[in-house]
Length: 196
Image (tube, rainbow, N blue to C red):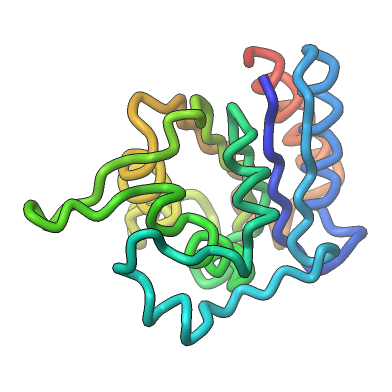
């Protein structure tokens, strides 16, 4: 498979960067090709422009502002996202990636008659999220209802691609994670990706 590996963290020496490096090594060891899209290092602008929003229902939709990334997404068989959860949500740069790149004609089509959207990312067979959160497991799941997982699985994955292999691996309580817990999480990532 050809995997688009999307990293969304501003610090080059972050744990997210270590997760992305581990993921890349594990995927390549299994014979997959990997295209690393480091949103910060590639200076991705997450802001939906006025013209992009105004033309959201135009056919065809003009995605020329992100055409290079759209082509990379279309060339992929799988998508692996690496990011921290901040305020129980995506970092702004990753939210902007979805807003601008997962656009009409790319990730979905508008069904004007039915008011729903029709999936267009049939090339994406795998959508995995490798993430961290500063909050403990119980707070994310029981109090907040695991919003990032819900958004990714029920919203983005199911609305954009049919029968996608979805998985999310999270290191909870990251703010207090010891070096041993971080190393164990990297091994968990390596082992999970070995199954792809």
